[in-house]
Length: 245
Image (cartoon, rainbow, N blue to C red; front, side, top):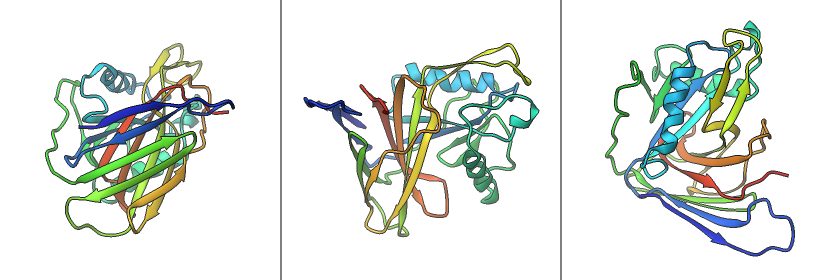
């Protein structure tokens, strides 16, 4: 079970994050749910509603770690997605190149690195029971420390991936396939960074944001092999009192 602890501290400056946040996965594999989506895609809103509904799931962060990667390859049809990055489409293409997905399209779900099509969104999210190792993460201000203890031997180095998630986002779409719609988004990746480590310990700064208008944030952190985006273990949680200057 993920431990989620915020330790309050008193600062006389203007802090970015006014507490120390501790996250721990436990050794049982958690489920990273990736949605590849775009505001320029008319078939994406139902998939986004499915992901948004995880906000009220009682296993959110303890078991399910949702992230929404907005891609930019639909921007040409008339609406520029404000949350999209070219790198996110390249991440999706990497999955396809490794035969983890048959092709690149939206909306597309990847669950622990495997393509998943929930039909009319009535299928249960796949279950994972493997014991893969314990990921511990500590966040204070813009500093993040992490270490991963393997359950079994693995290849070195491993990569730590950090995604800052925008919560409670709303867009009024003025052009393109979704013209006139109001889109509501949760778990949107608005900042992303990664770093490799041979000793499975990391000291990093939190990622810079490419979209800075979210009022509420969460974080998802996962480890993967260096040349494979498939997550090995993941952890996440809300970022209380979190603000970027």
